[in-house]
Length: 194
Image 1: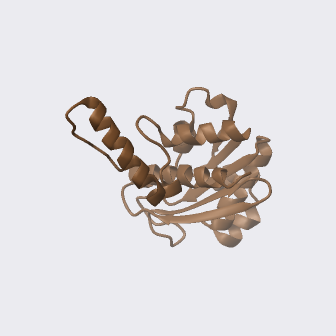
Image 2 (image 1 turned 90 degrees about the horizontal axis):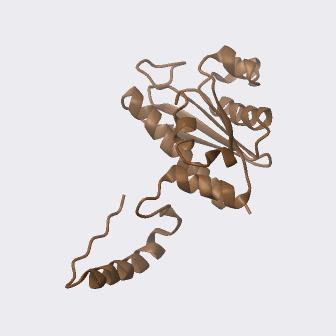
Image 3 (image 1 turned 135 degrees about the horizontal axis):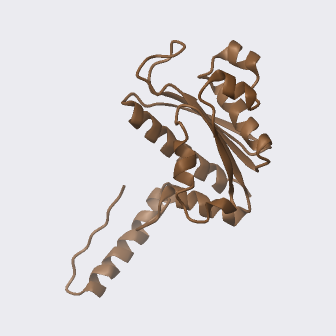
């Protein structure tokens, strides 16, 4: 977060100082600035989806539905959000379209499974974009991977991007940080879609 504050002889003078400072700062930070004032990241992502006429589907594991919950906190999200699937077990992932052999070969916490989850979500809910998240929320290691290991994939039907993160912390913090990373990467991906 970046906060600008100004003091002036009048409110108008202070607002002018803020405007001038914002004009100087924006070119430095560029696309890293995703909103101002009351904007939320999930609201900005929703606006981009509407602007581009795209729909979204999610399959999430370690975040337990937090990404879907966060996106649907935005009024009007039904215009772009097709649905979210919480596939906490391996059996649920397979039932929803992830290849069991892929899980056996790479492990459930892997970039390959995140990619398969994103594709399965996109296809099964007939969305333009699918997001898959898998990881270790804790408190114990999983498949030899430490708590906080997260893989995220974004599939737009033409290109798949996979990201990894390490958020060593408490279970709620891993879920929160993975959700925020997903929103940031989704925003970035949407900005690059023409």
